[in-house]
Figure 1: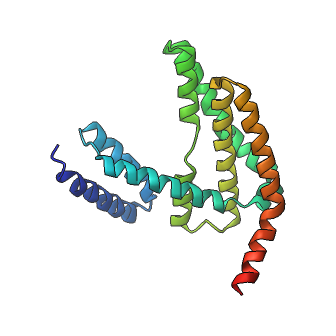
Figure 2: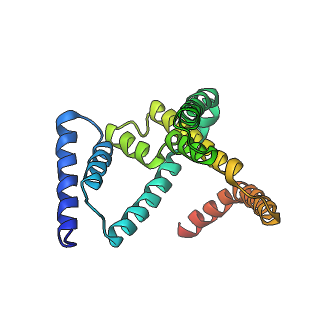
Figure 3: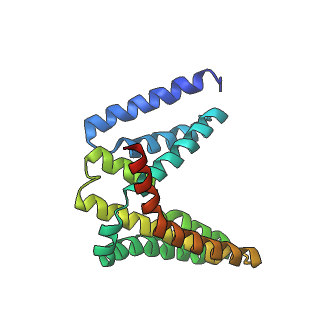
Length: 200
């Protein structure tokens, strides 16, 4: 494919996704993903600069989504968030694993990876949908964000437990992480307040 046509086609797909979203009321992020999957199967290939921008944008969206997780709501609605997030991870994981291992006859590790891949969710996509629908600051939206956070934590823990090869560096990393989290939780508020006083 001519590299000069790639940005033109990508822009046309984004415009088409926006028009479909306006007509149907569906989230534009979901429609963009669907159109991207169709275009990829039809031979559309991205350029390196597009991959870089997509990765950078994904990092920013994930950061913004993580900042929107209300820890107060997470504590108050912990049972609800844990139930929704836990089931949204466990149910697809076991169903996909059982199908791929016992019916499709994949290897154990391949079945595990398939189960984890299809049971996770995208915090960035969920955040985008909530922003579009205006539910970001509502109680329901905050519960959904907290549940998505639980689902992503399940994915990270599953990958760590199944595929990690622990060494002494792993223990060192865990120890340093606990100390850093404790210090940040204890002293970050004082640092932010000190900065506010200096700016005033």
